[in-house]
Each structure stands twice: as structure tokens, then as C-alpha cells.
Length: 172
Picture (cartoon, rainbow, N blue to C red):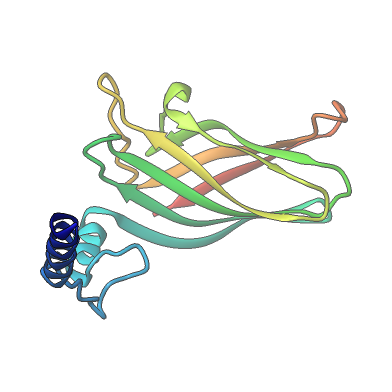
């Protein structure tokens, strides 16, 4: 019986002593919600260039579309990419699909295989869309120094007769 009491006391003392040895984590007030410090955020901002545009593509009875910004992203794991952010609004009562066609930068076509953009917006709703141009081993990202040009293609999967094209050319 004495051995059992001794073992419990020993285990209790070890647990108490280990509890006091733990690291206390200090919260840096310069951290953002993702847990990155101010220095990490600054390094990421240097790598990821952002151009604010606020270029209105369309504002009619059917839709509102605005090219908000262009982000140049460097990522060692996923590869480099360019993201074009859009503010979209569907003013109709049917669901519409927003896509791009004939994308070019500096008057040079961009391979469709490197471009991802298709945003479905329900009737009467708004959405944020992101067009991504990805860099692969055999392709490089466009420089986008002079202009970017594309057709914003809007259509309905439910009504094959509904289709609209908005030509876009943004000069830098």
C-alpha cells in the first residue's frame, strides 16, 4: 500500500513540475489574424505586387462588372501566377455565368490552358471573381506592361439564347 501511495505522489510531483516547464507563447501585437508578424507581411507584400485599377467593364440593365485589381503572386510551392480580381453583379432574375475569352497581354495571346476563370452569379446577387493566369514549366507569365485585353463573356446555362460579350482593353 505504501508503494502505491508513493508512486501516486511521485507521478503527481512529476506532472506538476512538467506543467511549470512549458513555454509561454507571447502574442505579438503586430501579428495579423493569420498569425504572421509584421515582418512576414512586409516580405509577402514585396513578393506580391498589387495594381489597383477600378476599371468598369460593364454597367447596364443586365450586369455590373468591374476589374478591381491585378495581383502578381510568387509562390515557391504552387508556382507564380497573376490574379485579376473582379466585382460582379447580376441584375437579372436568372443565374448567369461570367467567363473570359481571347485573353492577351501587351498584344500577345495568353494560352487558354494557363487561364482559370468562370464565375456563376445567381439572379439579383453580387460576387467577387478571380481570374488566375498560372505559370507552368513550359509557359511563362505575361509581363503586362502596356495593356491587357479580353472579352468578358456572360451567358446563361438555362437560356442558350442569352449571351453577351463585353470587349475590354486596359492600358497601363
